[in-house]
Every structure is written in structure tokens, then in C-alpha cells.
Length: 211
Ligand code: E4P
Image 1 (cartoon, protein in one colour):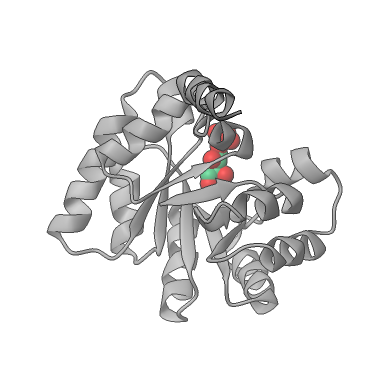
Image 2 (cartoon, rainbow, N blue to C red):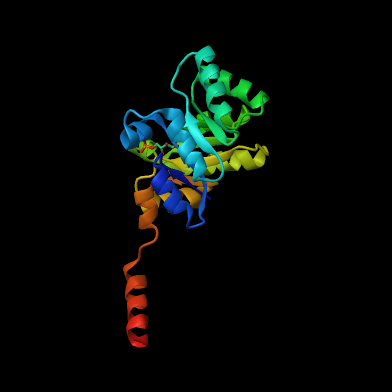
């Protein structure tokens, strides 16, 4: 499955019309880059209006109490809001409480099998492994994805693996082949998935012949 890694309502609306988008992920950096000093609630409501499935909204506070308060606020906007919990010991405590309340969760910033396994054991709806950032450290993200998928299947854990931090088309292909349930892709990379020079040439050849 494909999620859109974007906070741009126009892009989300345009690409959702292709019928291939199952959800949206945002993070504070994406929102700051795409929208600057925007009102978060307004922006998320705009995204909700033009999308389907979960819309992940990331927590920006760092204490358990503040994170739970923030989660409650975001989830009150819409049941489709999925709380993106940055992975840490405090994050796990917050996750555990959200899971017990039936709130959808996306544990984020995961760089290793161990972290993804802990997040899945704690009942996260999604575990987000960061392909590009893992590769920046010189590690092979494919084995992290495939080992995580194997243990989820073996222990019948319900979490779905999202692979984010996608920088190239090959990252999409490799993540899916390694066992990711979902890749979350930015609009520019997703548009690259459409394009093949041979396809364009062939269509031109057919339409010229027809004319
Ligand atoms: C995933 O949910 C994140 O929003 C995102 O993919 C992080 O990617 P980056 O490494 O480009 O910041």
C-alpha cells in the first residue's frame, strides 16, 4: 500500500484522485517546510477533507503528561487522526496508554529491528522504519524491514510496517520487496513512479498512427 508523506492539501487532493493513496503521514519538519507557521488544526482538517484513511500527526512534546494531552487534542479533531509517537522509553509508555484507549498509533523514527519489535509488541497500529536515515548511517535497511516483517508474521502481531524517509524510487521497490506493508512517499517521488520514456514514446507512436 502507499501512503502520502505530505501536508500539502492540494497535492494530497490531486494524487488521491489516482485512487492509490491509502493514508497520509505528516511530521513537524514536513509541515514547517510546506506550510511555515501554519495553524496545525486548520492544516490537518484541510488534509482530512481531501484524503481517506489515517492521517498521522506527530507529537512534539517530550513528557508523558504533555504527550498524552497533545494526543487527546489531535484525536479529538477526527477519529482518522493517527497519533505519531516518536520512539523512546517515554514514547512506549504513551503508546501503551493510547493503545488501551483504542487510539490509532504510528510509532516513528525507528532505525532498528529491536525498536520496531518493541513498538509492535506494545500494540502500535503502524511501526515506521526510516529507510533514508538508516542508509545515511551505512546500514542495510532491507534486512531491518524483512526481519521485522518475519517476526510480526511469526508472533502474529497486528502492527503494519510503514517504510518512510524514501529518497529514491529504488527505496520504494526495495521496501515493498523486503516486506513493508506500506511505503509513505512524497509527491515528487510518487510522480516519478508514473514515468517511463518508453511508455510515452509508445503512446505517441500509436496516436500518431491513428491521426
Ligand atoms: C515518515 O513518516 C516520515 O514523515 C518521513 O518519511 C521522514 O523522512 P525524512 O528522512 O525525509 O525526514
